Image (tube, rainbow, N blue to C red; front, side):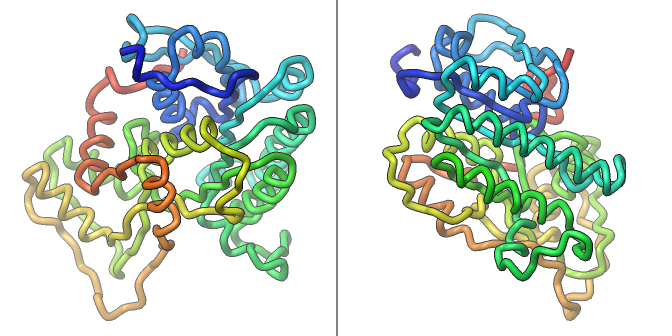
Length: 325
């Protein structure tokens, strides 16, 4: 109903970068639930690595609709010619693309992406931004950690570099993702959660290959993007949290995750061979600040079961997917 829509900042365009990715698509989905169709069409601009058309199913809008995605290289020109009030930035080549393009091209492409945002924000100093980053950037919070040639995690280094450059230009909320759930998951088999759910939807037994305990901190893409829009539209000018925030709501291990999926979908017992005495493979973070922010904006984080069901729904229901044309 129209009274449920919110009022965005009075002037300026609303920009989403990385619009065809997992978090970017979720950001579109959450935003179109908040804005009137008129506000959305007139004010939202989408960017990605190349031009595309995203086809959405019907939600608050009347019937399915198509959205134009512009090449990111056009963002600085837009910022020069139009006022931009809000930027949701998630465009970046993630770690899994490193082997596809090679280290040199990977560094070049990601720094080019950052440069497009820097140039645009130079023209949009009154804007505010949410910068989607990664938990891998935490390793570079100490200046002595900056060693581009020697690091084995160029992804984390480049994201940290971007965090610093962009947040120095406009008021920004930096959200670092560790492990993720959500309906617009891409290349599901590349992620433990996605792989488990693919098996579950096929009614197949889940197998864990790791012989050590794997600990992960999960956040939900819907929770993350809903918070981002709340912060962007209601930001008062007071940067309550000046440092990056881990966008996580819970910690779990892959065995527990697999067992939860097994219980929900009625699968045979999980197959595993874990040495519980071995040192865990751990990629976790403190969730307290993110949970506090969610509470500040009246948002309730999804439970693990809700995250699993939502992610599975996106994999199994074509009506939940956004189709690139």
